[in-house]
Amino acid sequence: MKLKDKVAIVTGAGRGIGREIALLFANEGANIVVNDIAYESAQEVAKEIENMGRVALAIKADVSNSFNVNHMVQRVLEKFNRIDILVNNAGIPLVKPAEEMNEDEWDKVLNVNLKGPFLCSTAVGKIMIKQKSGKIINISSIAGINAFPFRIAYCTSKAGLIMLTKVLAIEWAKYNINVNAIAPGYVKTEMIAELL
Ligand SMILES: NC(=O)c1ccc[n+]([C@@H]2O[C@H](COP(=O)([O-])OP(=O)(O)OC[C@H]3O[C@@H](n4cnc5c(N)ncnc54)[C@H](O)[C@@H]3O)[C@@H](O)[C@H]2O)c1
Image 1 (tube, rainbow, N blue to C red):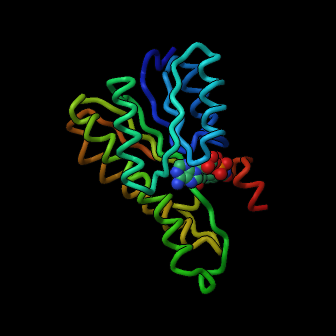
Image 2 (image 1 turned 90 degrees about the vertical axis):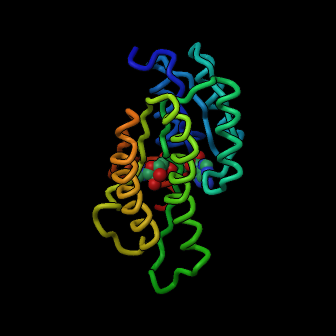
């Protein structure tokens, strides 16, 4: 088992890619904090993980809200006393012509997809800096590398996430913290089903 007794926070883990990451990490021996704004989904995934013999903690928190994020990190520390892995997975799509997108829609996508990883990474990073170890994995997208029409906020947020990853990686390398991004292509999840 590659992650025996590691403590991992996976954001947006109530379904889709985040859920699969949480289950995979648990299968490799990790104890998992299952974060989502959808609390019931998070609880269901946490139950699945407990049935695998691991410790799981479901936490309802909006990653774009600093109060929620700081409270989540505090609860994780109270329960586990350390954080080894953070997966910034929570994200939302928006498909709309640029000229029809309003300010609130732009803010919502940027807040969840880009500010969320910033808030979670810095809150968790402070703990990892003290530990002098940690892994942060940001789920970007091919839409952060290639331009797709009708996705101006989504593409911009995912491109920003790649740069956030690079800056944190060079800032925190000296603390033995690895920061990486993954840019998946299309994955058949409920997000994609809803878009289609
Ligand atoms: N599915 C794809 O094809 C694809 C491709 C590339 C990248 N991605 C990225 O992968 C990640 C997961 O995508 P998915 O397809 O599994 O999506 P999904 O919609 O199926 O799951 C996302 C989860 O995040 C949660 N969430 C949304 N906003 C949140 C918030 N503010 N705080 C906490 N949780 C929140 C949702 O409740 C949901 O459970 C996203 O960042 C997405 O942009 C997906």
